[in-house]
Length: 361
Image (tube, one colour):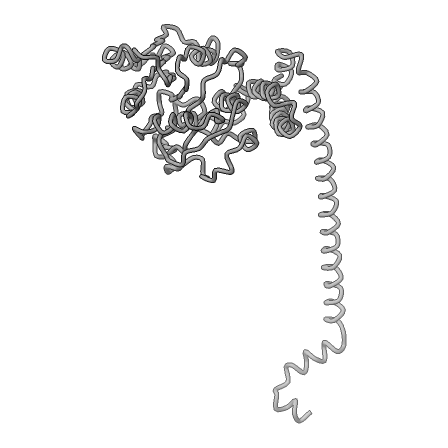
């Protein structure tokens, strides 16, 4: 087999319902280059591995399979994923998880052509269709904008606007990648962004499938549970990003905002549930204790200032209520004075006199 120009990385776990469509999407690609498929199944307990094996038997030279008999994610997190990146032989790397799929047979060719023509770009992506498997929400396109000027490093540091199954990376060495960082896809986008520009092809060429078995599904309803599981990994991500981008004050300020927001959420959970998430991170990364404690002090100060503002708001509201109450009391007194006045009584009496008699009077 020729040396592959593209390495396709695919990870799966208990995705029997979806994996066939994923793999078919790879083989539907119309390309003028060789590619390899590095597929890692993390000891699925359903029929996922059987389906993968069917494809391997039909295309043995294309596949580099890793079919686990023991679940690796439960032991070492996503370390196996970073190992797959290091295994890749291609000049470029594409990633598609076993529950997503590519819909355009020219996807890889378009992206390879773009990177071949633009040496100063480290990666290129495209919009994806978001599909809820149970129809709970209507399909949508992500990202919502197609404005090329939006797809900058600055905005990527602020929020992840790229879905992994839409990305083609220019392969790097990956010796300094930290597999403990999450979300790992956002981390990889930002890791590659240090090596060049971010390219965009405005054509929807894949589907990101949302379903109840997905790792981030619970985030929609149980955000605190997700923070308990992955909050520390978010701080690891930001610590890694500071290593890459921290020397630039503009980028470090953006990362600091993320750290402060994460510390604020974790400290709230610690206070309400008697957990020790913030301390656990400091214990695991003692060289970052000053960074986290600094964020914690800012969070505490913000809460103090907010409590002062809340107290001031309450004082202003109470003063307003007192003013309104006083005006009501004054109006009530004026009303009673009018009702008891002789002029009012005469007026009432006259009102009862027929109009014709009033003229005579």
